[in-house]
Image 1: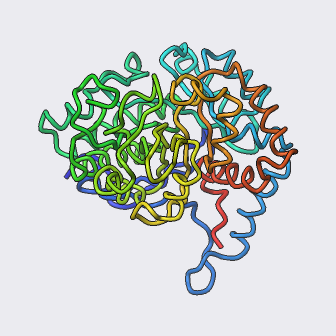
Image 2 (image 1 turned 135 degrees about the horizontal axis):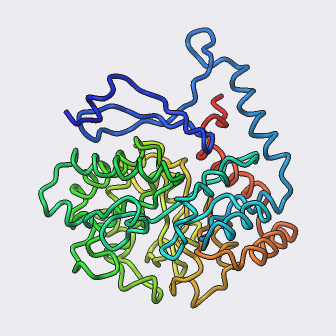
Image 3 (image 1 turned 60 degrees about the vertical axis):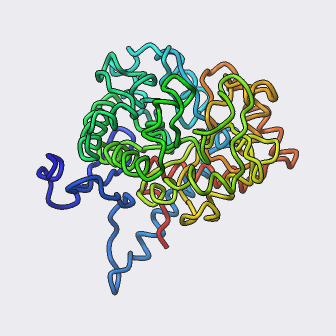
Length: 397
C-alpha cells in the first residue's frame, strides 16, 4: 500500500480556497481510476440532490455569466503566457482572461513572492486558472522550485512501478499547487518508440498503448489527487506524426490506423475524472483533411461524440500553443487561429504571450457580431471552464 493510501481511508474533499475549487482526493493501493470531483449537495427523497441545491448552483453560474460583457466572456476562453507579475496582473485585471500560462521564460518571482496567490484571490465571478507544462525530462518549467524529474520514458526504463510514478506526480503536484498552479499540461499520452531527442521521443512513456495507459494514468492520478487538473496530450496522437509541429505542418497516419494504437489510452484515461484533453496541431488523414486537429471540428467531435471508442467526453478541451508553432503560424495569425479553434470546439485557446490579447478579442467580438462565432458556442466554452475551475458551479439536474 502506498503512503497516500495509508494516509486516508475514505474520500477526503480538499477545499482549494485560493481558486474556489473543490478537489476530491481518492485513496487507493495504486493509481486506480479517480472519480469526478463533486461538491456535496443536500439530498432529497431517495437520495437525489435536492432541487433547491440544483437551482442554486445553476443560478450562481447563470448570474456569473449574465454579469459578463461579450468581450469578458470571450476573454474567459483565453489562456496566455505571462512574463512576470506585472504582465499577469494587467492581462487578468484589465483584459479579464480566464487563465494564464507559466512558461520557461516567466519570472518565477510571480510564484515565490505570493503575487500569484494574491491575484487568484482577487474578486472575480469565475476563478482564474494557472497552467504549466511540467512533464519531467526535457519539459520542466519549475525545476528550480520543485526539483528535477526524469523523463517519462526513463521512469519506465528505471523499472518504476505505477505506484511510484503516482507518488512522484503527487509530490510534484502538491508543490505546484502550493505555488498556485491549477492545471498541468501533462501527462503526454502519445505512443512512440522514436529516439529520445525527437519531438515526442522520451516525453512518451512507451511505444505500446497498454504501458502508456498504465503509466500516464498513474501520473494523471497523482496530479489529480494533489489538486491539479491533468491534461492528456496530444489528441489524437502525435507520436507517429511526420515531423515536429513546432516547426512545420505535420501529418499522422490515417485515423483508422491511429484508432488501433495512438487513441487507445484516451479510451480509459478520459473516464478518470476530472481530466482535460489537449488537441495537437497534426493533420489526420480521414479525419481533419488539411486542417490541424486543433482547428478541426471533426477532431473535437470525435472526442465529444465518443467516436474515438470511449465514452463521449464532456470535460475541458484545450488547444496546443497557437502562437509559436509552425503548424499554425505558417498559415494563420493568432486572432484567426484562436477564432478557428473556438469555432471548431475548443473550450480554451492557448498561446504563450499577452501581446495579442486585445487584437484577439477584437477579432472574436467581430466574429460574434458578424455571425461567424455563435454566442451559444462561446457560452458553452465559458460554462465548461467555469465548472472545471469551480465544480460547485455545476448544474446537476
